[in-house]
Image (cartoon, rainbow, N blue to C red; front, side, top):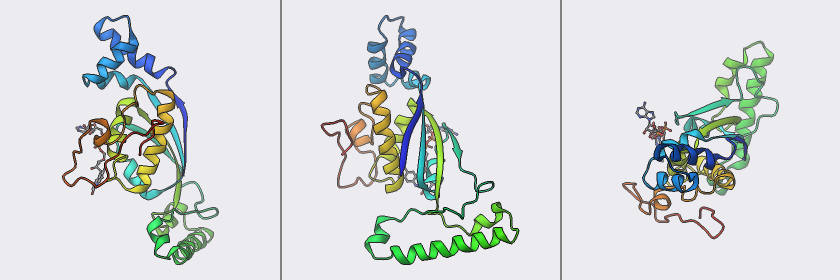
Length: 216
Ligand SMILES: Cc1cc2nc3c(=O)[nH]c(=O)nc-3n(C[C@H](O)[C@H](O)[C@H](O)COP(=O)(O)OP(=O)(O)OC[C@H]3O[C@@H](n4cnc5c(N)ncnc54)[C@H](O)[C@@H]3O)c2cc1C
């Protein structure tokens, strides 16, 4: 999976800080941002947006990702693009571990071959795609503001989230932290963001922030 931060509001922390300073008539955006975030006045974070491109991710993850409504998405179209030619799929580690990778890929390939046969015989791509599995790779561009990103990271970097969307969220967080370290300082699941798990059945391995600011 490839995740790239392709664009973001220039000086996101100055922008969010200036919004916070506007509310209190303060002269210090930096201090204002800190205290706004500390007091949960997170609407100031909505002034900073981040756009990511994600490649080699499954449509399983696409379905989970697009449940997040405070975001904008553009997805490689299966109606207009041929999915057959270079189709790839995501093979879960558990499948590989049990020795089913080869058999799984052969099944995937036969679905893709059938898809190609349908398209070649005149069936529109939008109908032929009904025979493609959910594991097929896609390409996404998404934009979220910093407030929604914090919420997204809270849900999707948690060990309760599925591994693929978790991997994606972790990569997005790494990129976001590089350009807005203050905003994303304690971003992560509740065990990291507020030191306490909110799940009914907590996992056995709470996360923490490592020496380089990475989620462990
Ligand atoms: C571990 C895990 C397991 C899951 N399992 C399932 C499952 O089994 N089945 C299933 O269907 N989904 C499942 N989901 C998806 C989940 O229910 C949410 O749809 C998804 O996480 C998006 O979260 P959200 O609605 O908080 O966020 P967003 O859509 O990103 O919204 C952000 C916040 O904005 C506010 N908001 C947005 N829209 C509205 C609105 N219309 N009205 C009021 N407030 C709004 C809410 O405060 C919301 O938390 C799962 C998610 C996770 C993380």
